[in-house]
Image 1: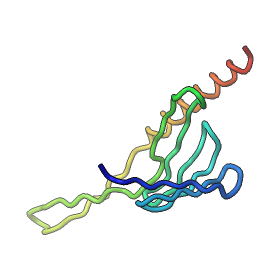
Image 2: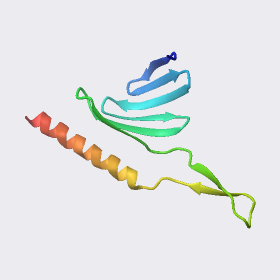
Image 3: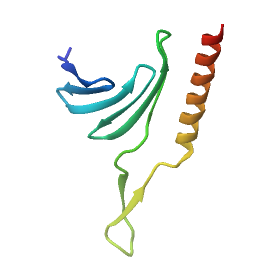
Image 4: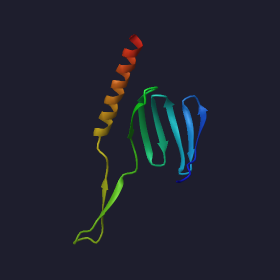
Length: 107
């Protein structure tokens, strides 16, 4: 079993510095809606506090480089990127969370 290290330092309200053995990252936001900025890109987090329900998706990051062999050229690099479909899932989930929170506040 391996050792883990994690420390969160609150810099300002809504801004936290996260330290771990793999590096540092910055979280901006409050419970239920935040964005984490780290060495691998940005990750969006949406959830309903106190329920354990949440959704996390990578927003940005380094595109993957794939190497292909071709008979005409010894080495060819192809750049691949993620499509824009993921942002629509993220926005849909955010809308559902907002509706649930508004309905819960009314009742």
